[in-house]
Amino acid sequence: AEFGRIMAALTLAMVENHPPPFVERYCHTLAATCGWRVLKDLVLRKWVELGMDVFLVIIFVSNVFQTWGDIVGHEPDDSAKDLSWKPIQAIISWVFLVDCVLHILVTVMAVVVAIYIWIPSAQQDPRLV
Image (cartoon, rainbow, N blue to C red; front, side, top):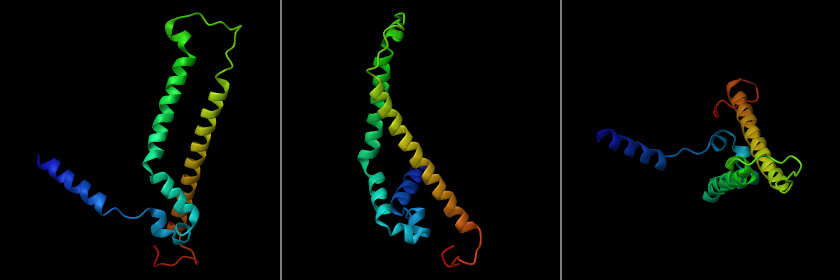
């Protein structure tokens, strides 16, 4: 019971005293751009997470429909290719490609910022580090 109260207090303190994102703390120029604000507002919206969950459920359902013959044990008929799923597969592939590219870009940006902070140079302001 005591551990639960401690965890509840820590959780409340973390929510109330949440520090600003890393980019806003150390990359003031980037944090002041319109692009950063739009991206931050977009990612923090509740519908983005809900939208990705719905998208994953749609993918699951479409995979079940596409492979229903295999699920119920029908022999596959190679002579009749079902091409109706090609557009859906293309859309799913593009969404995942965009998601992967965004993750890679965020990772690269994090590495660049980390290198900028950790490696001393003549351009750094020691007050920022």
